[in-house]
Image 1 (tube, one colour):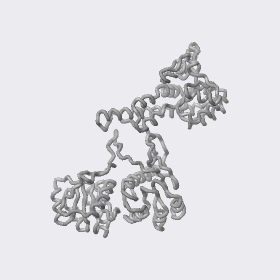
Image 2 (cartoon, rainbow, N blue to C red):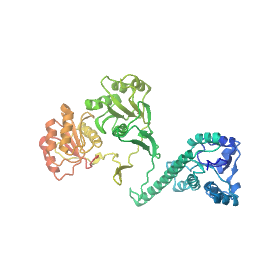
Image 3 (cartoon, rainbow, N blue to C red):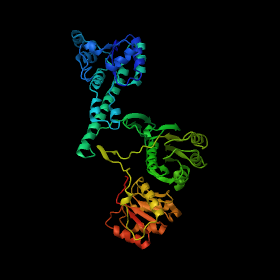
Image 4 (cartoon, rainbow, N blue to C red):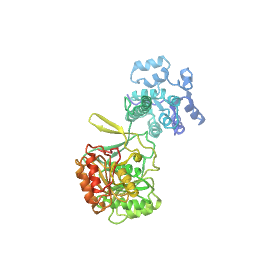
Length: 525
C-alpha cells in the first residue's frame, strides 16, 4: 500500500528543544496531537491543541509519572498494520486510534549519571520504560508508523508532511534504524552503569559484560593505505575535551593516520611538565621537550630530530602564541597538524598566512586539559577485545632507587624524570635519550633492545655527551651500558628486574654511571 496519511501524532519528549515549532507545523498540517505530562503542557502553553493521553485511554497517569503510555490503546494504535484487515478491524472494535507518527526522546539517563554525587535512587528514576517501548514499537512497525527520536529529525519530517501529508518508506526506514540505534545506546549506558556498580561492590575492574556504543562521526577518505576504507566513530558518553571533541580551525580533512598521530601527540604533550611540545612521526615521537615557554619548548622539540620532524604532527599542552607560531613558520619547516588547548588570534593569523603550507595545516583546538587520568583501553584482536588499565597514571618517584655507588646530581635527577616520562610513549623495545628536558634520540619498536639503544645513540649523535638514557624495560645484559658509556651518557634509568641486574649494576659502577631503578615497566606494544 501507499504510505499512510499522517492523521495522529503521539508526542512525549524529555528534551523539548524545537518542540513548540514542530508541534505548530504538525498542527498546521491538520494532525491531531496526543501527549502527556510536561510535553502536553509545553504545547498547550503555546496554544497548540493537544489531547491528553489519559483522556484518550480513560486511564490516569500514576506512580509520579512512571505509568503514562503503557496501554493497549496506545500500543495497538502504533503497532497496527494498515494493510491487514484483521489488525484494522481489531483496533476499530476496541475504539483504538491509529498513530501514524510517534515523537519520543528518552529520559536523560546519560546526563544524570554524569553529574557528580548523583545517588542510585536518582539514577533509577531516570531509566525510561515507556519511552523505549514506544520507540521500539513504532520502529518495528515503520512500514506504517514514523518514529522521530531527535530534534535534529524534525525539519525533514515536517517538510515531508507539509508536502505529502505522509513520509516515504525510505525516510521511515532511516528513522527506524536511528531509533533502534538510540535505544541500543541508551541500554548500553544503563548496562555500563550497573556493571560499574557490580565491579565496585566486587572490587574488580572487569565486569561480566562489556558494552560499547559508538556513533559514526565521519567517513574518512581512506584508512592507513588508499585501498582501505575507513571511518571514525565517537563515544557519545565522553563529554570532556578530547581529540574527537576538538574543533578544527584550519586545514584539510583529517586522515586516518592524522588522527592516530594527533592522539599520540596529545597523549605525550599533556603528560609532560611545564610548557611541553611533542613531535610525532608514524605514531612515535621523534622530538619532545619541556621548557619555561611554549616557544622554547617548540624549538627544542623540533631540533630533536629535524629530518624526521618534516611533515610531523605536533601536540602542545599550552595555548599556542605568536612566538610559537613564528618558529613553526620558519622557512624549511613543514608540519601536517597541531593539536593544542587553544590558539591566540595572532598565532592563527601567522599559521594561516605565513608558511607555504598555511592552507593545509590542520589546527585542532581542544579546550581545557582534563585533569583525570585512568580509564580502560580496548584493543581489538581476532575474535574479541583485549582490555587493560590505561598506562597514564603518575610514576611513584618516591619509590625509585639509585642502585649504583655514584648518585645522580639534582640536575640529573630532573633529567631522569623527564626521560622516564618520555620512554612510556615510545613503542617497545623503547629507548629514549634526553638532554636539557628534550628528546634527542629514540629507539622504537625494535626486536632487540641492543638495536634500540644503538638507534637512539646514533640519532642523538654528539648530544649524547652528558645526556641520560631511559629504557622501558630492564637490560638483560650489560652490553647496552657499555655502549651508553662510550657515547658519553651521564645517567641511566630503567625498571630493573632482570636476573642479571647485578651484572648491569656492576658495569655502571665500573664506568662511573649512576643508574636508577623505578620498579615499574612501561611496555607499549
